[in-house]
Length: 133
Image: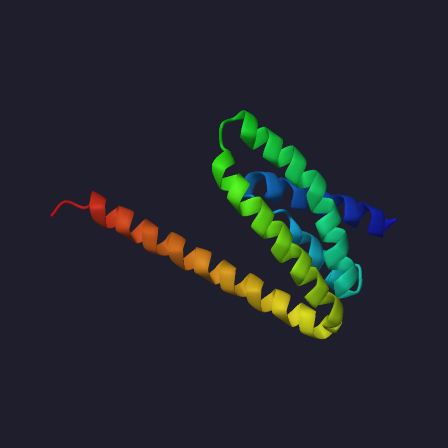
């Protein structure tokens, strides 16, 4: 029973993060499934990608209605993302679960650290602009 509740809660949190931050929820879904539900890395990634379809449709439609989608950019990014996703899925299929988990962790840490640093740097420059000379 707790697995059902945890899975629903994970879906809610991942969907909320996807709609709010545009991250798709995979950063939430995959660690939750691997670490708490003891799923294999490959299965967690596959389930995450399938769940992200719904999140992307709802979040993308909502952002589109609010004027937050640049369609010319989407027209260039989407085909490249689909091709890269296909190639990466093939690559993931030949990697063992431990290697895939490490790659996921390194990428998540890198982008998290990069975003934190960027936010910190922008915050400091905004404060510096406000200070009188």
